[in-house]
Image (cartoon, rainbow, N blue to C red; front, top):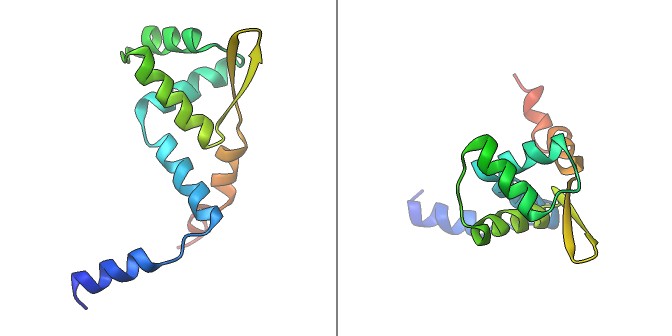
Length: 115
């Protein structure tokens, strides 16, 4: 089997909604900055962009522009890992642990028991 055939087969494999959701989840947690955001929101929910940005910068030394940092929050939101609510003009971010626990009981669980 040649590489071209294998690549064609891989890309023709159907991706269902749960695969798409799993891809978004692993993409979201696959970045150090986003994992630090998760760590900070685990300590305290309902934080504004500025609060999370300041905590990640001060506690972890990760220095991005606020615009780049905002994109990290958007990726986490699209993956369902953070939830947002508005309080006046302020967008507050909170951790949603369901996608994290689902990953342990979902696709990855079958490999935990595999020997």
